[in-house]
Each structure stands twice: as C-alpha cells, then as structure tokens.
Image 1 (cartoon, rainbow, N blue to C red):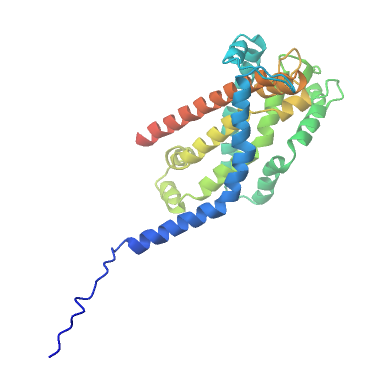
Image 2 (image 1 turned 30 degrees about the vertical axis):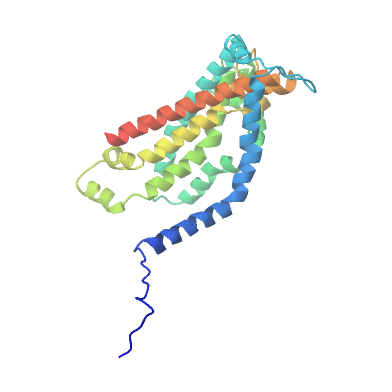
Length: 311
C-alpha cells in the first residue's frame, strides 16, 4: 500500500450568496456605465452653472473685471426690494389658482374621458392638444383673443350678454387673472393624462361590486377611486407647484410684467435684472431665493404625504 505525501486536497469554500452578490454588483456597475454620459452632461450644464451662480450671488458683478466678495449683501438688498415682494406675491397668486383650479379641472376631465362614451378618444385628443403646442404660440393666440376693443373675440362674447368690452391685459385688476385662465387651459391636458392613467389602473371588479351594492357614482369616486389615485394627485400637485413658480413665457409674451407690475412674477423680474439691467449678482441672489421657496414647499408637501400615508 502506497502512502501519498501530497497532503490533503485543498477545499475552496464558496458562500451561497457570493455569485448573486457579484452578479448584482456587475449590474450596478453596468447601469452606472450607461448612465455616465447623462451624469456628465448634467454635471457640466446643470450642476456646475448652479455652483457658479451661487458664487456670483456672493460677489459684486463687474463685467470683465474683478468681482469683490460681498457676502450676503445681495440677499439683504433683495429683502428690502418692494418690487421683489410684489413679484413674489403675484407668483404665489398664480401658483394657488393655476395649481388649485387646474388640479380639480384636470381630475374632472380625466374622470369624464375614462367613461365609455362614443367618440371619447376624440375628446382625449382635443384636451391634450394644448400640451404639445408651443407655449409661445398659445400666448400669442390668447393675446389676440384678449384684444381690448369690441372686436376681440372674448369682448364679442361679453357683448352678446350686454357686458361692455374689457381691457383685459391692460387692466391691473384683470391682467393676472386673464393669464391664469390661459395657463389652466394650456396645462390641464397634461395633468389629465396622469389622472387618466391612475384611474385606468383601478380594478374594475371593485367598482362593479360597489355598484351592485347600491353605491352612487359620488360614493364610488370619494370612497374608492379618489383614495386609490391619491398618489397621482400628490405627484400632479408637486409638479404643478414647481412648474407654476417658474412661470415665464406667457408673462413675457402677453404683458411683459405690465400693467404697473401687475403681472410681474419672479422669473420675469430675475430676467429683467440679469439680462436687461446687467445685475447678474442681484439676479443670482433672487434665483436662489426662488429655489429655496420651491424646495421648502416641496419638502412640506412630501411631509404631508407621509403623514397621510401613515394615517
């Protein structure tokens, strides 16, 4: 009998989750590799300019010259600027009405086009058309609809019921409201699609069971459908607030902030300060204040949603 002096055979122990862990790590690395171009573009064209703008807000802007550090002086000047507070007030009014009324109207339209009605696909297309239309074009068209003479379309409609012609965009009491109506019409189709997708994801058996039990359409909507699409309402509200606080194009095209700053909003005031008055440092400070306003409102909405989810 021969004895082997090679010693015992070495055993390699493999943990059960090693291969799975390596596979997951490989997938994560592959995902980041494919995402790297987009991350670089975002860093170069988004994140880096944001940092430069913040640095500029802490300096005194001098074109083609040295820019002395002034700390929070620009932010202090903004806090004492009456026109800044007027533009913030106008922007907040715009946000409240556009988001509030637009959310309810888009939800009502989504509920309507979700029904089995003949020709409903045509209505869905009509409601969504303003979303794919240029906002500049929409603003120009509505500016003509608000033509202040009796020949304007809206004034002709008012004339049919005996109401005199209005100077819509030239009246400080009507100008902002007129733009709000246009903004609701232009964006309601986008929110409607989100609500429609949420409504079509509901289980039909639950709704049919509720109908068999004698529930009215309002009871079905309030107790079954609305709680089920609450997250969609939350998403639409957050996106609406972020979008509305950055309103710029319709104001610039239709009124340019007039009459008497009655439609001046933060975005147009920032644009005027930075690119017309060449106060880049002042405009940068207002931009970061606007960023903080949107951030605080978004965090507040997220906190409210968490509290609602917890009950």
